[in-house]
Image (cartoon, rainbow, N blue to C red; front, side, top):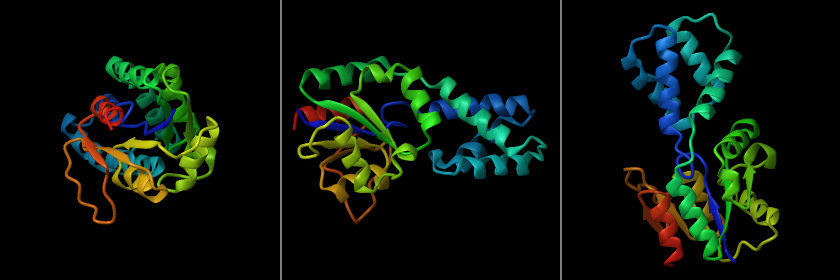
Length: 214
């Protein structure tokens, strides 16, 4: 029973869509032009920008007197509220489980936000467990977080596959720990010369099919 180590945001759960929907609601609420959503998405950098830095950028651009902590809270809660589990993703996880694979989420982020996404969407019913970097004290691509995921479900790392959309965190992490990987390209072209994914897929369903057909 090999491990299937899965990223969360933009792998198991769409993050780009919920963030955009939150951003459109937020901008409408402060009376900003709807076209500013492109600026907001750009500054967010697919979630890589620190939440406090993003909040400060918003405050500065719109000269808001709202404390940064309130913006961070609104961002966290708003994105979580907009997040949904795709039924096809749930189906793919069930198929992987039936085929003898053990799905475990390995993600970077805060426990409050990532745990809420997993539980509120019902994703917890389709995975064996999850490891969040804040709680683990180590982040992808550090190999230790993958080892912790294996320990969490009392299984060896040998034979595991890593699936994710981040070249550095997911594919780089897989390379560092010596595991095969599937990169969800999301319309991008691979450019890193230090390492490369074992396979490339256009979404979670195709990625699971690739692993099962290995």
